[in-house]
Image 1 (cartoon, rainbow, N blue to C red):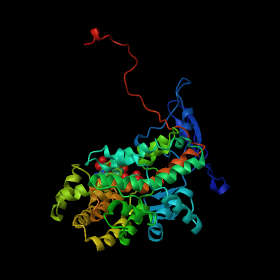
Image 2 (image 1 turned 180 degrees about the vertical axis):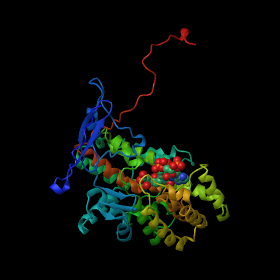
Image 3 (image 1 turned 90 degrees about the vertical axis):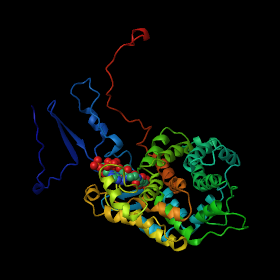
Image 4 (image 1 turned 45 degrees about the vertical axis):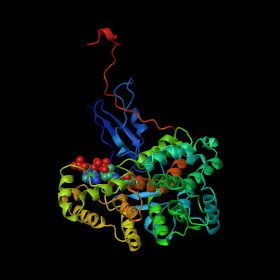
Length: 444
Ligand code: SDX
């Protein structure tokens, strides 16, 4: 076996370490030196590693993409070990304290905080595109009264592509931005329509005198009053929650948005797919599952028994754990603070004490500590939504509205990234070797 040891650079002689990885294929004894950039190697550089020339070449195998960077991105930075989340470099804690959702949406989409003039123009653009075509009402009528609002949201977003055929000109910046503004503006209206359908109430048209979240509350709750006046505490709470949910780098929903968008389909169709991914109970659907879990536990005295069941693998602690965060999700801390502010006007959600006891036990129990399971953004958000009177089924829709901004920013970034092309992963084939067709008469 030929073995070739690398010359270990002697730092005393000023030899700087080379940014390369040396791989020896022990099947052939050959050694390969691969460049390291941004602490990664390019998977395509492995394809030169073959046993013989007929080989396809080596690939990486990474189910669920646990350790694969699929893109470069300048939008959101997460440090899972330190519990850090930044949009365009600005810490989420500062945005939650000082910003509002539309301003944060501008930051995520355009890369900088807007000047006063830019913010006014952006707000004006969005608030004057909140109306949806009247046909949407007819579409909504097709759903049963008890249709899940997230299914209605996904279907209606996909249907929007039928109204804006120019949206498939995805490489035209002006046309692309027009669709982005439409989706940011119309998702609260679509969500509110699905809520009013669910409650059997007439739809409420947008009121552009109100803020983005104030108008959302207006479309949800307005009854016979001439002018709806949103509760400022609720308006602010939704702004903070929307800021926290706006983007989260390459999560499952965003990965879907990028993969679908890479086929150059219009953004409405791509976003319907992203919203479908978010709907899953392991992803954005977890906030609904947390309330089901807390309701099922029913009382603080049942918490120890429930925790023991989870430790035996008989179920998950919904709202806990995260692929990236191995520390407290910074968003969960802010949601928890916001919950107390909302409870001042709604009264404390009775499930809160069960949630607090679950957190107290989990944060000190070896099973959860060893697996670095902490509350994530979904653990406390459902308690606020429920206290504000939203039905549980509506919780994932409240996640999808703000995440529309992240999906669109990530979609656009992927489209203009010269390194990207249509997403098409490889596989390890495990099926039968080639064999002949067997006529029906000859089959056993
Ligand atoms: C979101 O990716 C994002 O950024 C998502 C998101 C965003 O903003 O887009 O942050 C939003 O989706 C938050 C996550 C919401 N989902 C939940 O709260 C559902 C409950 N959580 C889990 O299903 C789980 O923690 C995931 C899906 C969030 C992460 O799963 P991983 O990274 O694949 O981890 P894993 O399933 O491999 O678990 C590792 C271990 C396993 O135990 P062992 O096999 O090692 O013995 O931890 C255990 C798991 O059984 N575990 C849990 C658990 N989560 C993981 N055990 C009990 N309860 C849990 N919640």
